[in-house]
Image (cartoon, rainbow, N blue to C red; front, side):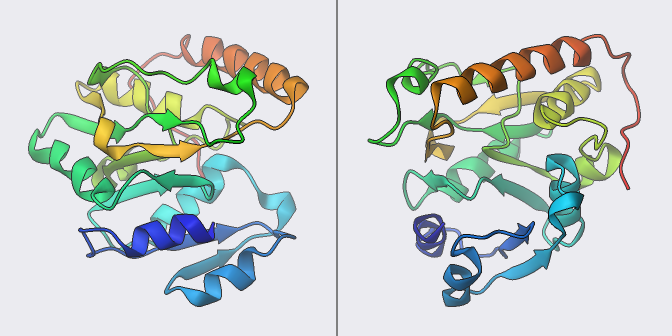
Length: 210
C-alpha cells in the first residue's frame, strides 16, 4: 500500500483525491496512510462486499472521473493517471483498464494468466485498475447483489447501453493476486460461474445498491 501511495504522489496529473475504504484491516494499513493525505472511510468487516465498498467510496468522491485501484496494484509509472484520462476524449468510452503485470514474487501459476496482448479495445472492465466517469456510475452503480465480478457486470451494462471499454497499456499496474494454488483454483471457478450468470442478464437493467 505504501508503494501504491508513493506512486500516486509522483503522478504528472495531480488534481485528485485519494479515498480509502477500510473494512477492519488488521495489518499496518491505518499506520501507513497517516503519512499521506487521504480520506478514510471505515466499515465493519461483516459489511464488506466489493460492490458496497466501491459504491461507498465513489459516492464520497468529488471528481468527474473515478479511478478504482486495488491496495496492492502499483502503477507502472508517473504518467499512469494522465495516460488513462486521455481516452475520455472519446465520448463513447465508458471505462478504461490497463494490463496487470506480475510482481517478481508472483507464483508461476498466476503468471500464465497475465495477458500481454496489445489490443486496445476489449469487452471487460477490471477493478484491479479501472477509470470511468462518475456520471455513468450514477446511472448504474456496482451491483451489490454480486459477491464478485461487479466490474465485469458494470462493463457489460455499459456495452449494452452503447458505450465501449478500453484497455490502455500506459494505465497498467504491477499486481499479484493469488498466494496459493488452491485459492487460484477456487476463485477462478467462482469467477467463471458468476460470469455465466451475468451473461444471462437482460439489459439495460438496474443494479441493486444500499
